[in-house]
Length: 168
Image (spheres, rainbow, N blue to C red):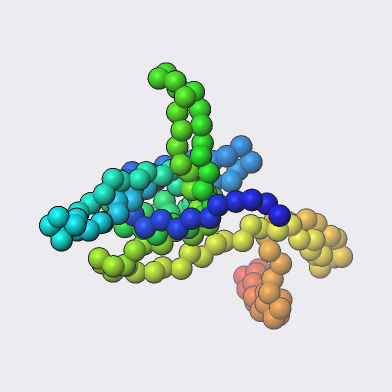
């Protein structure tokens, strides 16, 4: 069993998402997320803003592409993922940051509306072995025709051949 801390944070994007590409070609996006809890003030009976907590949100692959298109500075979001503390040494000494490796990012609809647009991923072309009319095989990166398309392709080829023959 792996120990991990999962967290859900409701807040606002504090920066524009920054898109990057890792060495293995995977895309990833980071943005800052600020969460300011509202707490009751016992003296006045009203609510006031407490201290803002800041996180760096990291998202990967297709979710990263969708976040880059959908989230902007100030967008209210709900982020779920695994949290860890990133430490490094900077000019002013040791520094640290709370990082959320997000597996879900959603626009918070409490204060507004959104329109969902499904992302359509294009499949990478797969090499296919094809056989020509003379029995010769060759490799291509074009996808093979769908079932039933072969007949239509043969009809088009026959019409083109007939047209060429009529013109001679």
